[in-house]
Image (cartoon, rainbow, N blue to C red; front, top):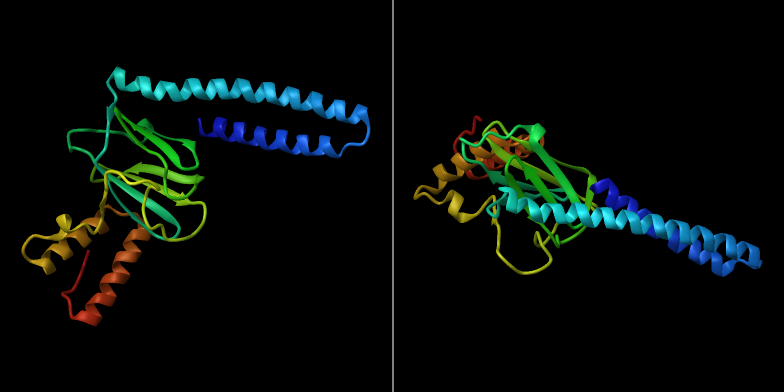
Length: 220
């Protein structure tokens, strides 16, 4: 679906460019030639739009076929990407081959994994669809990595107000009466479940904290 959506966008840009060239053409025969090509591409674009609409509607129909919509998740970010984490029950086994990450636009995506579906729309800024990916971690957690089209910090995940997702540093996740112990447990959990980039970030952060604040040794 992502490639089809990109094709529709590209056709739209081609039609705009041809329309501009038509306005600059001096000869009637050239204007007619360009108009014929515009008509042809417009028909191709229309057919692809119908196909895309059909595919999009299939996502809605999947709920009626037993697909479970997921709404609980955590997220964090770097300037380059957003990471979304979805906890799966240990009894739910989803193979990486059962995962599909589909983009309905550069600010909306759907992830189908096994019998589950997770969708987010109206993201704060556009995404780089080609780089984005999704995996199942060893601890049975879905990890969606969404690369930003532009390297920058987002002030929020979505551009409209609504249900507020949990951040990885949510107080609920670290408050257990002993802040130092809770923080260590959370950092170790994130280290165990994170990718190589996250492991390097956590190790560096813990090293700096240890030397600045005298915190206990962290040996993931």
